Length: 454
Image 1: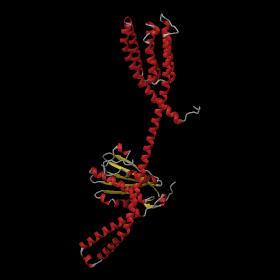
Image 2 (image 1 turned 90 degrees about the horizontal axis):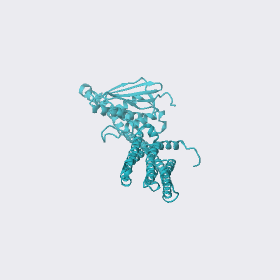
Image 3 (image 1 turned 90 degrees about the vertical axis):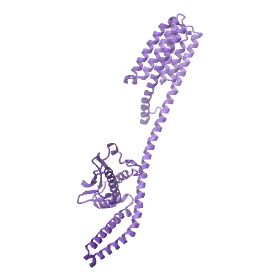
Image 4 (image 1 turned 180 degrees about the vertical axis):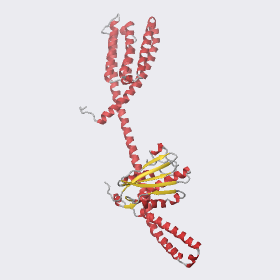
């Protein structure tokens, strides 16, 4: 030891160890006390075999000691007893020693067989029970003094030779051995506890690292998907847009022909064909967002109309939106800053989750309300559905990576986690609110285009 004061971590470890050691001592003291009662009562056979004339007197003494020990066991159950478990253990161990010393004094003195009981208790305190070093030294010293006193009051007295000297040496040697055992047992217990604590800390760090890796893996997966979609979209711009333009031109020319003008059915068919081509054109235009999205940290310098992003998201999930009543409540100005493609991805994810929940619950008709309003320099958006809601125990976990209530194979549980990260990168927060059986609302906010982020 260098005399250096312990660090806060070391002090916390010692405090935690003391709490665990107190519980350890409590359990072992109770077990030792019950074992002591059993051994004391087994000694009745020894009393009857060696000292039949004193058997009744010894039996009453043994019964009294057992009752006192049991009383201390009961006391260990209360808070005060738990706080002073070492002294209660010390007390119940001394009770048999006092009884044995009395038996030695009324039987054969230094040559009494009961001397073995004193030695047994010393070894028990040092090897089995979680005694402190000084407690064990004091216990061994008191035991020896009790033996010496018992021999002194015996009619034969003390002779500093023969059996008394041999037994004294054995008692002192037992006390020394018990003290050594106590010292190293205590060190071993502390080292084991420290090792277990370090392993537990490493496991917690590993769990945090695994969670971080899961988040990163999910984000990388999403980035790869968006990159693949962008590559596909870039090709579609040239491969689809030109034929669509030719078709629109041909439909417009055909609509001007006298035959088409004279036939209402033909005019209606050409109008429907034109609407279909325009829808294809809009979808290709929406995919441009993914094809030419910005990379890097400067995405917040880009500006876009949220209502356009909303329209794109609705069109891109149009196949899922069939039969869904979609209502928009938007302010006049929805110009915001950020990654338009990422926000479209967030809206698509929110819409897909809401539609799946509403259809699973059999809502008729399924309805979505997308509302937005300005609060200071942030556009706050709420997407509300009339689905079955989210259970309270799941509500706090919906943004955890890989958490999903869908059946196996129907989702990885990454959508909301990635959406949460996207909104977080825009300086906002994605939250959820729900009433089971009635509705669910997902809310997030985006920065206004006219202001700078701090």
